[in-house]
Image (cartoon, rainbow, N blue to C red):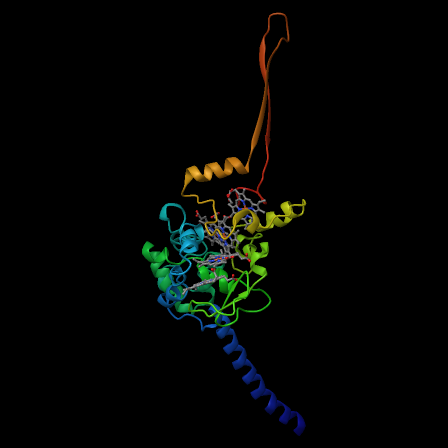
Amino acid sequence: MRGSVKYKKIMIPALAAGLVLLLAAVSAWAGGGQSPVKSLDELLQRYDSKRCQECHSEIYEQWSRSHHARSLMGLNGFSFMSKYLRKGPLAVKKPQEATLANFPCAKCHLPQLMNAEPQVAKELAEVVWRDDKAVVSRLNISCLVCHQDKAVVHHHPEPGVLYGPENLPEHEGQVKAVKRSAFMSSPAFCGQCHGMGPNFEFTPPVQCATLYGSYLHAYVADGGACTCLDCHMSGTDHTFPPDFSDQNATAKLYRAALPMQVEVLPYTFHPGHKQNAPQVVVGVNIQNRAGHRIPDG
Ligand code: HEC
Ligand code: HEC
Ligand code: HEC
Ligand code: HEC
Ligand code: HEC
């Protein structure tokens, strides 16, 4: 009896110490080893791609033309979250009521929000509510989202480390080391956001992109051997076309992606002596050269 009391006495402080360590570790892992952001301003600063612009100017310029650089904006500067916050299952009566639960879309459109303190959701809701495009356009899938937060699996990103194609013991930027991440070149890296189907972890579940599911179940299952990077990132290109705001370039890409062959056989059918029925046989063959269905969704 006495033994078990002593056991409890040791266990409770041990459990408490474990919990403190675990919480410390979780907060240290969040956002590349830093504590969770406390304000929207801090979120903007920490993930600002301008920190990388000076030395990686070409990649920065390519990235800034990509949809990743405006991941909360639809076409023509439309801030799509404003609609969802006002009407439907994610709606709130006023922005101050918003919590992180109102932003399941951030899982893929702004993953850094998932590591933020709850009050950041209220600040974001206010910005979205008043349609402050200047701020919304700075909330995006930045260099650090891909090269830090989303770059590794099975463990959290190490504090003060960037991930890339090779190990670099020294790196000139603010982040001093670059480690190799083999995961970054795999299709699953892109699949984290490019979706497999409904996201059942949310109430209600949300579904948006499902392209990675199509890649796995249609393309790879059918013997396709290219990765997303093979087709979408020739060299180090960070533009990730198609850019849907550029209609001419997009039309050109889709004409090349979906080659179409049409065969037409016109003839005249004579069912009776005085009857002429013009007929036509049209054969259409559309091929899909992409590694997945298009369009997605
Ligand atoms: C599983 C990840 C994921 C979730 C969750 C998600 N999206 Fe998306 N969404 C994407 C990806 C990836 C694209 C672009 C590629 C595509 O459509 O295949 C996209 C595209 C879009 C577009 C088109 C963008 C444009 O440029 O016109 C809109 C609008 C959109 N999502 C809104 C939402 C909203 C609203 C939610 C929450 C209700 C949401 N998404 C949740 C991954 C996601
Ligand atoms: C959507 C995810 C994504 C974003 C956003 C992103 N990158 Fe990358 N980046 C990649 C991937 C994937 C690779 C290739 C990794 C590989 O080949 O293993 C890469 C490669 C690189 C490389 C190595 C190029 C080489 O020489 O091989 C550099 C440098 C780089 N990125 C810098 C940046 C900078 C700077 C930004 C922001 C302006 C940025 N990236 C934004 C995914 C991203
Ligand atoms: C002061 C200059 C400087 C800044 C700022 C800087 N970098 Fe670099 N970075 C370099 C140099 C130099 C290399 C070496 C090789 C090269 O790409 O030519 C490099 C290499 C890389 C690589 C490739 C490593 C590999 O595996 O081959 C990645 C990824 C990268 N940087 C990402 C970033 C990101 C993300 C930022 C912003 C957070 C950033 N860098 C800021 C100078 C800088
Ligand atoms: C952190 C989540 C995330 C990762 C990782 C990611 N993407 Fe995206 N990607 C998105 C979202 C969200 C959009 C749509 C942004 C918008 O327009 O609202 C998008 C847009 C695109 C587009 C432009 C077409 C479109 O439908 O908007 C391409 C192409 C693309 N991604 C390819 C890739 C590839 C290839 C990789 C892997 C190297 C990758 N992405 C990694 C989230 C991600
Ligand atoms: C065999 C080559 C190939 C592979 C593999 C491939 N894609 Fe594509 N993808 C294309 C082509 C071609 C298009 C049409 C537009 C273009 O040419 O850029 C396209 C279009 C897209 C689009 C726009 C979809 C839309 O709704 O119009 C996204 C997003 C995208 N790919 C992401 C990915 C991701 C993520 C992967 C890996 C899971 C991947 N792709 C694998 C060739 C490929």
